[in-house]
Length: 362
Image 1: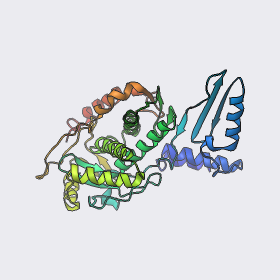
Image 2: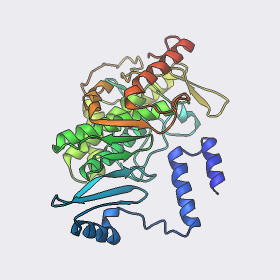
Image 3: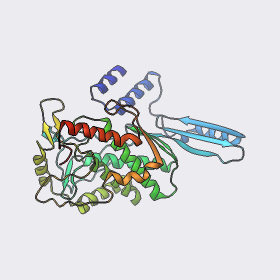
């Protein structure tokens, strides 16, 4: 079983995270462990007993881990018991991800243009909600799959910070927070930056496949971070809040065009931004967007607009508050961190432009 999972990952049929989760599940089955019993460690009765014992001692330290969380408890003399500073791990279902999207996929029966008035149905940890593309005359093509995934990751990271977790094991890398802000707005800003960096790491890790640094990827990721941030700030059920914020952003602020107009855009960008091939996968990018600026397709109804939050630099003020280390190689290089990610991006851009002059712009 495990060798089949490893082969499926090598064949790009499974993401590294999915392969890891399946392998863990298979091993749990082999040793007879109940796969359904893993949960938040601080809710386990044995954990509670350990914490109580530690608290009654003169000094003690307890660390308990589950597949998704680690809780540390320390006690020294008359100092108060400290709970937290543990690890929160992203799993296949929390926050989850959607199998989407790549320019040209609609030519092979997958999601394409969407009706911007029918985008409701977001579900956290269930990878649900309409995915595909909407076009805005202000900011260009919007990938709803990327947007939703980043909104969900925003919630995951923020909830972890609120829960006192300072180490976050995410899909693409590990983030370690130096200090969790006490103010709600500052926690949201920090969570937003970590979420953006995680999405950036995905573009680097998947280089140079058929969708890495696709023209709409980075802007769509940032839009998802913003939607998640607004939804969390609004409060209430997260899924409903995301639906509301998506509608406000896409239709009210970005003035999204009709499904028919988006179809026209998708037709226009063929052979300009992407092309179809007889290889597998059957589509490939002709242009890649490395700086995260929004790209317009050159439609008659385009009316470019700028938004202060819709740019990678908006997250830079938070970069000194956490470290981030990628788990996977970037173009063969290991150990890429937040401090080197821009240099790696610049190197990939230079490599791309050398082979494809001028194809890093609309």
